[in-house]
Length: 198
Ligand code: ADP
Ligand code: MG
Image 1 (tube, helix red, strand yellow):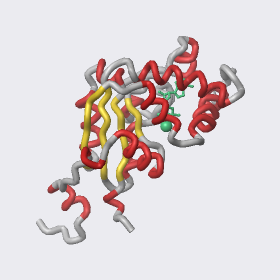
Image 2 (cartoon, helix red, strand yellow):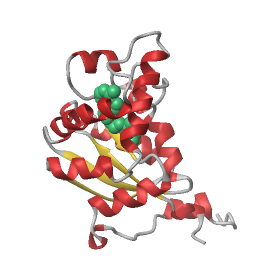
Image 3 (spheres, rainbow, N blue to C red):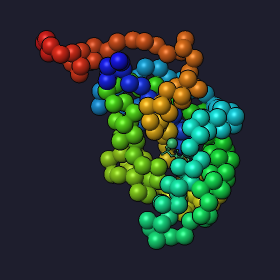
């Protein structure tokens, strides 16, 4: 079995974060907790790659639609549709526009519980309700209501894989084996070595 420290996750710095010159802030948050940046690249994605990315998980359409409906109901508001699949059918088109609007940076981060740690630092999907102290809670304001009434995707700066399985699939989707750099960091000895040999 792989050690906890070998867990990897995928992060994409979205076009809005790059336009707002937040690359350093975002990378710094993942770096300072002790995760390792395995590899990264900057490029403008195609709409096809974005559609495939969001539909790698066959449940994504239903789950994201249901999460949107709950986001409205929790605030006592009426969702744009009661059909989760109708919500994500429209959303997928908006996501393609958003995510291909300019360059993004795709990164692989590694460390113990990398998937959950990165989601915790990133914050919940809707910036209006993302926790303070998270990237989405601290650096951006947006809501389901505003993005839906303006007919666009929520601008929330970062994508982060939602589960270990999603991370594995997304890493394969965005990176070739050759692009993944297996390197060691000195700091990993302090974080993980059993003997604390200073
Ligand atoms: P997360 O990125 O937190 O994993 P999802 O996978 O559910 O969130 O959704 C993917 C992305 O689609 C979100 O990060 C956000 O940019 C956008 N999004 C999700 N739901 C909505 C919605 N109801 N209206 C507008 N944009 C949305
Ligand atoms: Mg997701």
